[in-house]
Amino acid sequence: MPDRLPPLIAATKTLASKPKWVDLGVQLDFTVPLDINGITQIGLRLRGKCYSNHPDQNVTFQIEYQFRSLSKLVPVTRLEWRPHNEHQNPNFGPAELRLIRFRASHLHRFQENYDWLVGNGQPLADNIKAKDIPFAVPLDSDPDGFAALVVLMGRLFNIDGVGAIPAPPWKAPRFL
Image (tube, one colour):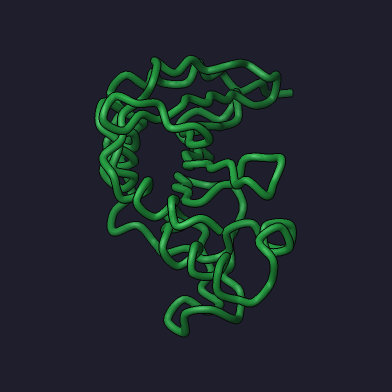
């Protein structure tokens, strides 16, 4: 695994362009490359996703990276806001994170997950296929709306200019 990734995550980043949510039917999604010092970083991007008919819940932001050894972009840090599904940390890795369950908003911090990717003795591709990014921590406080979530994400991911991210064009839920 390249040593290039930790400095990219630590660096102050900006959005290379204004994100635009794409309606994929059930899901809304955007991806935008990230710049550092005005230079777009190949293989580094921010993704946002949510369900189109679930306003103000189940929103995910993640930084993805293109490792040379893999054909797909890989999430390396993730923020999940008001998720529908429970997350449980595995029974390995940092002792203080083992088996914690989350029904509320949480953060998959870069460092613990990167340490797992490079430190468990398995090839990177095997780690990604097996567990994605397994370790999460609770948020100190839950953002009270999408705008506050975006500000928090910008701070946690060290991305300036996140105010350019528009709110998702959620649809009203349909009742049968």
